[in-house]
Image (cartoon, rainbow, N blue to C red; front, side, top):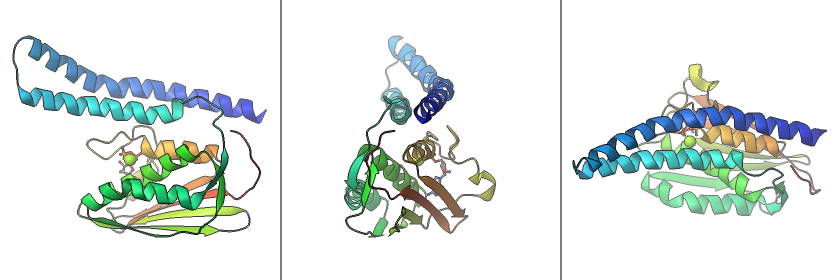
Length: 227
Ligand code: ADP
Ligand code: MG
């Protein structure tokens, strides 16, 4: 049945990721172990504590992002106003945007009802906005647009950041693929998994030094269902 197929897919994703998580967490753990040994030997230094916090934060980020996929199955889908979801996310990200001199503009349609898991969709939009802000180190603009037809809802995110070189575009979304020094390389993969579970699609288009566009299409249906 469809449910069994989805279940087995989820298991294999978790299996693949477990190996990756173990690998990614080993480095910060080794560093932490080294510093605790130094501290135990009486070599006290505030810089050690700072570096330990950086490594702990890295582990924390990896575990947080991994949790989204490893969460219990059969996530409930309910009717939510997409406008409200996106508006909440924009408010949540506003501080980070302001501090990075990024302006978020949006043109949303009100009262578009979407069958979704609210927390998961918010996670998707947060991951996309974070990436966009991180791609504009000296500030810039983000634009969010919404379109709606009888059978689909489109949500587009535009940024005028660094863009993605063509040769790595196909690797974006691979677990742990990151170009950032402190990146986890899990954000886009999590987005893909969530959008897939919502029977939608997500596409990334990008031009180097021009910007990036991410388009999500969700089905416009009005019956409740479960994934
Ligand atoms: P992370 O942000 O931890 O690196 P993600 O999965 O969120 O992991 O993103 C993977 C990679 O995709 C990033 O390291 C970056 O190279 C690229 N990327 C994602 N979004 C954008 C964007 N809006 N602009 C430029 N590059 C992006
Ligand atoms: Mg990211």
